[in-house]
Image (cartoon, helix red, strand yellow):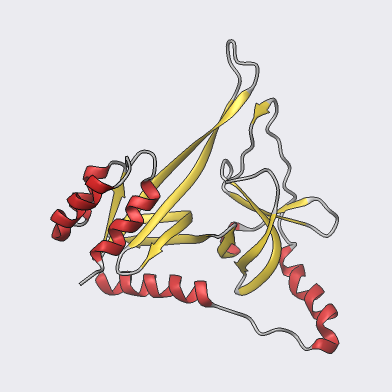
Length: 224
């Protein structure tokens, strides 16, 4: 199980560092067009959320130029956004309309400095499937699963709204831990209990900044 976990971490790190060679200058335009056509093979993305306040996306209601690893190739400078209600990564097609990328072909993508990896694996007899934000990849792997719930208008509510949710996971020593509260970190990092206690005493409330506390704890556990 530990060997599987080590291989799993190595794959994440390698994908984060992967790069593709640039086409020759004399055929750059022609090759780039053909290269990117592989992105434009998903269904049209149609925004069907009606009478809703807010948006279904991860951060903003507009695309950002970023990087995606798709169908065994890396694409830079691609307009991307991430609908976390439907769990769909979208891009802009050649005819302006948006396209939903085929989930099974997505290996990873970055969006505004955040790195996401598509997982479909079993660790510690638990299946991790879907898009996960990689918060930390070292001896421990810290993941966040982001999603929104589209709640329709009801009663006195004039508009529906999108309710954000997240779940955190730590993969360590071949085991997967779900972390929802600060005191669960004592179980994850049982061998560093006193250091975790000191860190939590100095850190902000876990409810307000869970990501920073999880990353700091994972880094702390890797110090000698």
